[in-house]
Image 1 (cartoon, helix red, strand yellow):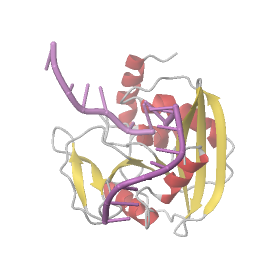
Image 2 (cartoon, rainbow, N blue to C red; image 1 turned 90 degrees about the horizontal axis):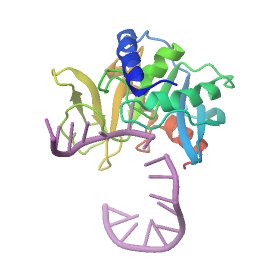
Image 3 (cartoon, rainbow, N blue to C red; image 1 turned 90 degrees about the vertical axis):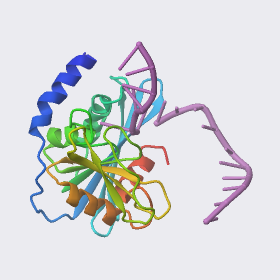
Length: 211
DNA sequence: GCGACAG
DNA sequence: ATCTTGTCGC
């Protein structure tokens, strides 16, 4: 069993492997992962693949496994990645990009779940969380598309608070792996033409049994 | 020592 | 995340 302190050390080592470079690939398929907890130690992982830019559902996988790690702020990936990898085994479509319901580089050690999963799968990932975890920022303007940077203690930009819908709470976007901030924001906006949460994540959340 | 704290 | 339906508001 991995202990919290061991998990933290692993994050410090893995964070050096995170890439902020987008390779310019053509994106036709976007995946999203989400995990739901029905109860009594059960983790229900959902993976969906959506076409891009059409945003039509292409594939959906749901898989139950036992919960093996508790929720500890900053260590979310150790709780949710195992069940996601189980579901990943059944996925037939090869996505070009993966969205995570979590932060990426906007994390105490620069390795939020989106970054950790990106390194594990060797795939570009984007973190799109519903609330704040780490970093300092000012509230963005109220119009759709307005955003403000999230900075670490040294002033380095590690994420963006983005308004995907006018007058609605913003989402917290940060690059996971193999992608930069600007490209991450572009995909989040392109995937959220109507709702606050990007379509891939909304569908994954729904598939996991929450919506 | 005192808050903050993805899902 | 989870316990949980209708309801107030734009």
